Length: 214
Image 1 (cartoon, helix red, strand yellow):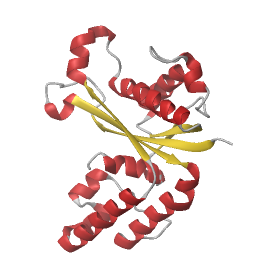
Image 2 (cartoon, one colour):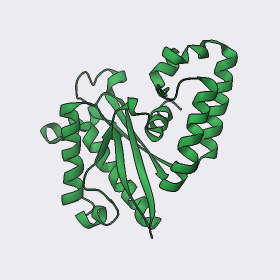
Image 3 (cartoon, rainbow, N blue to C red):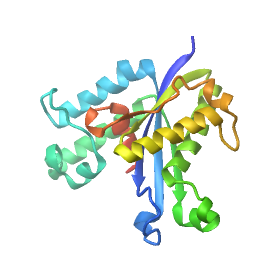
């Protein structure tokens, strides 16, 4: 039986070509965390919940969602981080968690200004460009490790989600410039990308989000 894995995907930056002269909007990064299914079930997810309960006690029916902008700005349940002692303890435990867990990260960054200047009307949608590049690397990792898996990304809304599903489906069905369809179909367990909101309390998505500030 092949090893089962999942790729959790989150993004940082603007996914449009608007205001790309602005350095804060010029780049888009897609971050993926590959986690083995058994490790996720027995260690990754439960230990992350323990970490959150330790530093941000809460009712499990109303889970705390680790979100980088809220943590940086110490909003919502992260008001406790306004205390330097609490912040130092949380940072220490979070870094220990990231060091101890078994997972692999993939990071894809696109310079949107350079891309559109080079390809003009033929330029790819930035998010979809990064997704295809990430799928090539993820599937290469799966082949190397004799594994198979699927992909779960953060939902971004109706139109964006439909477009993202279509981009994934094209890659699965048609392949890319560098890889044929069988390269993807032989290791991906689903023809469709899975999408979940950040409020779904998905541990893999939260860590993918946090890696974008490390």
